[in-house]
Length: 183
Ligand SMILES: [Zn+2]
Image 1: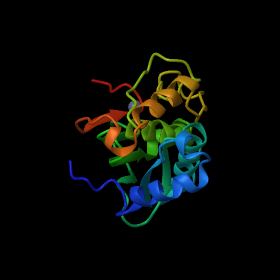
Image 2: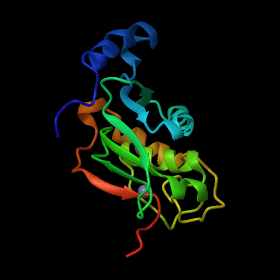
Image 3: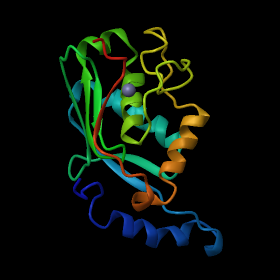
C-alpha cells in the first residue's frame, strides 16, 4: 500500500505539540494518529458516519478519526449492493467503506457505519458476539442498535495503534462485511 494515510506533516506536527500539552515530558503519551476520512461520496450517511466516528473517538485515544474533504485515506461511499455494506481496508486507516441502502433501512445506520469503521481501525468481524460488541455486526439482528465499541474492542484498537502509525499492525487489504455473507 502507498503511504498516503496521513495528511503531510500531520504526525510530525502532533509530535511537536504533544509535549507542550501532555504534562511532564517523561510521562508524555504517544501522540494520537489521525485518520482523515471523506464522506462526500456518502452524503446520505454523513451524519451517521460522523456519529460512528465520534463514538470511536470517545472510546480510544491512540487514533482519532477526523473528517476532511481532501487528503483523506478513508473514503465512504453509498449505493446498492446485494452483499450489503462492507469495508475494503488494510485495517490501518486506509480504504473504502460502502454503505448499502437496503441494509441501512433494516439495520441501525450508525451501527453499520461504526462497525465498518472498526474494520478500518484493524478489528475483524465477530458475528457470534453480543449486541454490546460493535464487531458482532448484524449477528445480533436488526434490533441491535448499539453503535459503540465495548471495552475490549476499544482496548484492541488502542493496542493496534499504541505506537502510532508506524507501530500499527500492517495487514493486507481485505474486504469485511457487516453481516455474514450468504453464499
Ligand atoms: Zn464486518
